[in-house]
Amino acid sequence: MPAAVGASDAASAASTGLYLEGFGGFSGLMDDGLTLDGESYDARYGSGFLSGAALGYQWTNLSLEVEFFYRSNDVDTVSRGRDRFTDGDYASTNLFFNAQYTFGSLLGGTAVVRPYLGVGAGLMQEIDIDLPAAGAEDLSASWEFGFQALVGVRWELSPHWALFAEGRYTYGGDPELTSESGPSRTAKADYNGWAALAGVRWTF
Image (cartoon, rainbow, N blue to C red; front, side, top):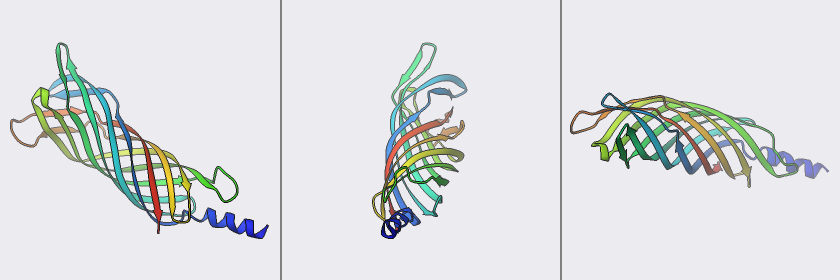
């Protein structure tokens, strides 16, 4: 009995300490409004991806981390009356600080499979939209504030290795984008995204 208790305690403590994560998966942007040179359009976004890495510290239940991730989604259509543009992408690079609360294991014994919830806030270091069919490319904004909510489950394979699956929602408001070069163009596009991710954690 003491040996079994010791093994369970060891498993419970396996996730604590400094860790490094890598993750990636599917990204979606909510269809929303877009303003191009003062004219309002409806925007429809297609599939995309999100990938990134995080460095953090895990206590028994609480973790704090800094993460950097890149997200990009296709622009399916931008339309206004009879005007209709297809093709393009809406992307961002992001620096966020997250806090997560990890619950107790879903399984007994030495198996450690833990659900977690998290919130984060940070800066969208660069947001960029390209609409080549509309003659609007390289419209961008820098250092826009955003926040996110996270929910996931982590499966600890050993004291060092863990796998996780996560869903997240990120809100970036409606940043105003301007041309980086060429003719002066402006755009304002809502940035509300969600993602379904999988990743791996290494605890030092």
